[in-house]
Each structure stands twice: as C-alpha cells, then as structure tokens.
Amino acid sequence: MSKSILIAEDDTSLLPLLAYNLKNNGFKVIQAKNGEEALLALKENLPDLLLLDWMMPSPNGIEICKILRQKKETKNIPIIMLTAKSEEDNKIVGLESGADDYIIKPFSTTELIARIKALLRRSYTTFDVDILEYKNLKINLKEYRTYRNDRTIHLGPKEFKLLKYLMENPGRVFSREQLLNAVWGHGIFVELRTVDTHIRRLRKSINLKGEHNLIRTVRSAGYSLD
Amino acid sequence: MSKSILIAEDDTSLLPLLAYNLKNNGFKVIQAKNGEEALLALKENLPDLLLLDWMMPSPNGIEICKILRQKKETKNIPIIMLTAKSEEDNKIVGLESGADDYIIKPFSTTELIARIKALLRRSYTTFDVDILEYKNLKINLKEYRTYRNDRTIHLGPKEFKLLKYLMENPGRVFSREQLLNAVWGHGIFVELRTVDTHIRRLRKSINLKGEHNLIRTVRSAGYSLD
DNA sequence: ATCTAATGTCATAAAACTGTAACATAAGTG
DNA sequence: CACTTATGTTACAGTTTTATGACATTAGAT
Image: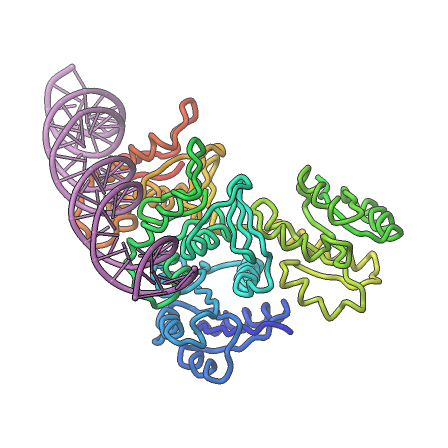
C-alpha cells in the first residue's frame, strides 16, 4: 500500500509540481495551500509524512509542527520542513520545533524523495533491520544488546536509545534538542544539559581506553558518532 | 568511464544472460550467485548500482538491501530489485527496505537497461546538498566537518559559519559589516576589526603552505573567497 | 517492602572559543 | 620618500560551552 504525504505549501507554482513528482514516485498526495487547509486535512486523515513550508501565512510550518507534536495521534508522524535559503539560519528553529529533517529550496526532486524514503524507512522500524553496526560497535535491536569488539556492553535504556539514534545516522551532528526529541520524546520537559550527562555515560560505557572517542562533540552544535 | 553493476541472482541460467546483456551495453559487471557472494564482492569494490534478486536463499535481496542501507559507504548506491510476478505484491516491501526501483520477471533487456540508466542518471547528478565545495575545500553541513584536499580541518563555530557564508558566494566580496551581519547576526555589537581576526584564524586553518591563499583581501572593501 | 539500577539536576572544573587592543606591516598618495 | 590609512599578527583576558562527579529521586526487580 502506498504511503500518503501531506504537503502544505503556499507557493502556488511549487505545490502542484511537488505533488506531481511525489505521485510519480508512488506516493499518495494530499495538497494544502496554506496552514489552515493542512490542519483541516489532518482532521480527516493522518498521512504517513508531512512536508511543510516553513514560511507561510499563519499558521506556518513551525506552528503546525508544534501543534502536531502535542497530540498523541500525530506526535510521531515524520515531518520535513521546506525552507528558503535566506531562512537557513533558522533551521535550528525548525528542528527545535520538532521537525525530523529540513531541506533547503531550491532542491532536486531526487533529493527530496531520498529524504522522504529515508524518513519513512526510519519510522517503520518494526520492519527494519535488527542489527546496527558502526566500526567496532554493534547493537542488536531485537535482543537489546550492545557489543564493542564483540564484547558485551551494558547500557541503560536511555543510553541504548541514544546510541541507536546516533548509529542510525553515523557522522551526522544532532543538537541536544534533536536528541531530546528523538530519544526522550517530543514535548517532554527535561534540561538540555541532561543530554550531556547521558552522552558522558554512554561514552564511559562504549569507549575503550586507547581507542579514540566514538562520540564527537561539536561545539555549539551537538554530538555525533565519529 | 563505464559504470559497474553488481548482480546477485541465484538463477544460474539468468545470471550469465543478464551479465552478457549488461556488458553489451557498456557496463562493467560483477556476478554473484547468491547473497553471500554479493556481500563478499561488496567488500572488495563498491559498484555504481546493484541488481538484486529478491528471492534467494538467505541473505536474499531484501536483507542485503537493508544491510547496505545501514552503512554510510553503501547507503546511497542505487538498487534495483528483481522480483517474480507472483511476488509482485511484495514490491512494496522491496521499496520500503530501501530499493530504488524494482522490475518484474520476466522483463525485457531494453526495459532493464532503461531503468538502470535512469537510476544512474538520477543518483549521479544529485547528491548531498548538504555539502559545499569550492576548489579543494569542502564542508559538510550535516556533519559539521571541513576538509582541505580531503584532510579534515578543525574550525571553531564562528570560523565554520564564516567559511560557510563565503563558500555560498565564492568570489563575491563582502564588507566587514556584511560579514558581521551574516555570521554574527544583526544588531550585535562587535568591533569591525574582529572580522579581521577571524579571517586570520580561518586562513591559518584552511591554508596549506605552498598553495595560494584561499581568502582574498580587497583593500578598503572586504574579503572574498578566491 | 527492600534493594538496586537508572535518571535528571546541579555545582564546579576544564576546555575551547571570542573579542580587543596594541603593535607591526603593507599599500596607497602626493 | 614621508605620511596616511588599511590590514596582518599576536597575546591575553573574558566568556561561553562542555565535561565531570556527586546527589537526590524515581522506577524496577526480587
């Protein structure tokens, strides 16, 4: 069964183009010319993924995002934010508001499709692999086990989830906000700095002395697997 | 240069036929009689595209696909799944597992070639828009990494942002004021000359001795990437 | 209920990054 | 060349950001 995607985009030349391309790629598309329409459409049907233009007359992408993250039925729907180049600096805002990814206009259809697929793949984890590997790290999602150089490592639930998330996109830097959203859940109130503590515990567990740190700190940005 | 294609197909009458046809069309072909062989071959060399039979003794096409999508080096290699008619219903499974296209047996060589070319064309032109390149400089926005001649360079947050801004408009000259606005933000009070210092630090980090200075000073105007 | 492991928060230490100012050079000018 | 102005360099103190360890609280297990 094909996945459905809701697009909210007020650029009337872009919207049909996007819709056309997504349809061509086997997706079912629901179109919304503005935020209002999008919210309305969401009451009808829950799509598998949302494509939101960040800059729209209110409610804009960010606002919609925040609203959705509040509600139980919608809080786990993957969201990709569409942002113009000039707004790029605000990408953090987009991710803080709970979006899963952002893409800068103008973008290629292929790129968009790739990201959509990646996100859909990730959110249907039940269907996915049971084993994730990176360098000499390995985790078994089904058995809930972690290995470093084939030696078992014990991790608490949070650390496990954190590591899993990092391993899903090795190399990519995640801000503390993103990690909180992904690991702790959206709309949960926990200090940002708590992430530091967990990263520290994780490092303590997975780092072998002598070998270089597997988790990289990127100052004023976040952490990533390295 | 001709593209290489790895075929994993356990039907021993089909495999050589496919290989023959692809070779005739100018592709370099690597053959694997089953999943194991395919994985082994992948350790040797990364092909430009994969043709996977979905029904094989384990690991089958889907499984291989999932495995490849986990790893960074292989996650962007286009994959076409070969499925028998009776398995057609499962085509969604194939695409969800990360395949880019599927084709139903029996298929015509012409069609297969067409799809292969289409995929190669797509994946060739489009890649990460999260990567900025200029001469032998490269920065990866998602990973917050900077390279000069493929060697990693460490930059502080401000330097990174500064470089990013310059790389977005290579050649263009920016005044100190413009740089302050773009990198530090509007309405911030910092000495104009502070830009000089950061430019200096940036130069120090990215310039290789011997090679010419990548940042040009334009007297009484500003700086630019050159 | 009792004990143990896991969590979230803080306070403090340690690093890394910034902005300035002072001085040195280089580039224009007449 | 002498003078003026712009830019390069360097050192350093002040800030910001992150690491670390301790502690109180909560959740889970026996």
